[in-house]
Image (cartoon, rainbow, N blue to C red; front, side):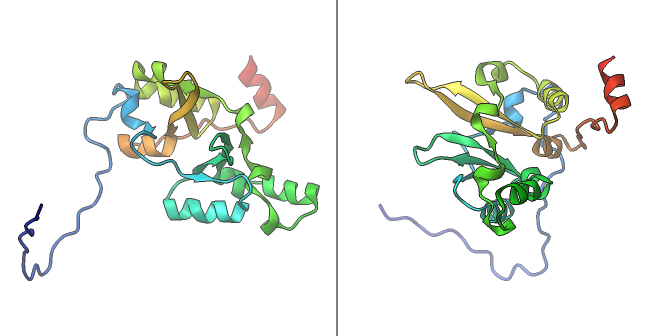
Length: 193
């Protein structure tokens, strides 16, 4: 089949550049949660190997504009997740000292949260949930990200999507933060009482 060409606008001159909207039209805390989920059936997951270096993972995060990567093993199964907090926090210093290695030799596997320690939301629950419930759940757990899992056609569990508190904030057009972490034993005791 032959395709015709598109009409060309000549000499456009000085022209504005579109900017993204601050909040996605129609997304509120009462909107369906699925509207703010990164659906991995529609968007390719940002993945890294557990054997990649932490520096490679960080460079990939910057390139993709994300703050979390899924660490996937050779069988394409989830091995864990790595976040910018894992890379830029205190964990790498402790790992380098414990393993007696240079910072540049730290692997994703050394600092990631392994899959067996991860919690996730069930896709069936997400389908009937609201954005506000997701935000409240992330804030309650003091997490910036959450995975969403489903059962595939063959009965296996799979990662279907993920939530990012910063992405939700952008879509809502409002700041969202995690509650401050208790800094002293008195604050911890007060929070428990």
